[in-house]
Length: 104
Picture 1: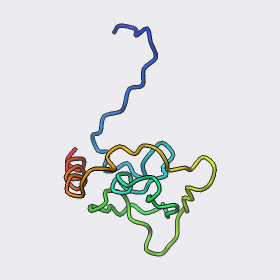
Picture 2: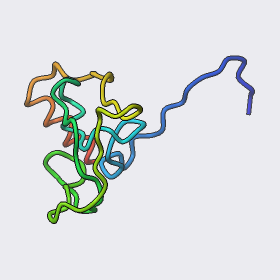
Picture 3: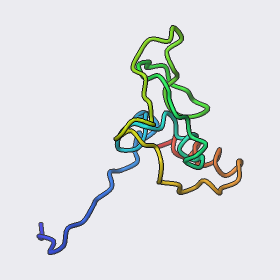
């Protein structure tokens, strides 16, 4: 292999991305549908700790009994802001994108 002369970020493949929630580098967005919302409309807090898949919003459902880890995006280091790619898509396009990502 050839050595690159400049530092580069290589994004990981999207295969199985539907099963890797919560999303963003710090796990601050519970579902891919939430990731397609403007940052101001994303959940400020949610519970993590369930392995039941949410096929509609593409992520994991909150535990029914309320137990688990509470992710508070207002805490330092937990911000869910930025990364607003796709927020202006129509609802139909967002749903189509989610269906595509589920197929990977």
